[in-house]
Length: 325
Image (cartoon, rainbow, N blue to C red; front, side, top):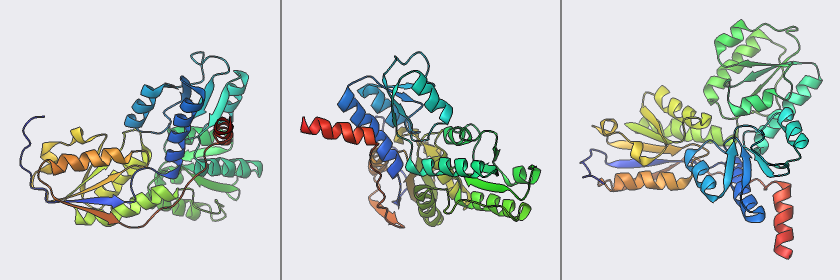
């Protein structure tokens, strides 16, 4: 390591909650347990979670990540679906190829899939608030492709035309900006007064909580650094939340991506991490600042989370059988 240059940074604030959500924890553990139970290779469709570091670590242990269920997966191989969920077409494809599938879809994403199926069966046009091309959106739209239209902005709502304005329902991706989504849903309500929606909000608890923590912390900071990968929707939204409050903010995968010019004249640096970023990356970033003489490191706790999800049934059953053998 080169010489560590002096810094004006005096204090770090660590947003809490930050980092792993229950759905990510479950998905990563699913791959780890599958490797223990069945041995490598275990195939995973798409990145199990949107984090480069996690994917590289699992790859080193024997997970093989594939874009689609094509011929690169041998017949009857153990195949895991990522936390973001898949469409029924992918399930059918896996069955046709006789793959042994383990579904690591986050239960909160599964909830949105069920809503899509329910609204479609009742003849609604479903408006999905989300980002085009995101894996979660592709999986959800696949549940009822003829019934779902995607909107990303309030302008999309204004341009929207539907067959029957009285039979409209909305659902949303779980990892969006809370404020932006609320504004889009309000616009939908104005345009379609009879619109119906899910019983509870689709944006998940972890997305909401991490944004709330950054929202309260950002005004106290000269700079906010969010650890997360570029393809992670919820991580990008944390940066956006800070920037919208007027605080300079950047998304980084690791501590070695911090740029000197970001730190010039900054005294208080806030740190958060997206729902798929392991805490070890936060610790390394804190270490980076401690090496520069920063001594004040404070947790900025907004609330505590205690959500846990059970591992997929097949993993639980096979683990129990292995333990009693």
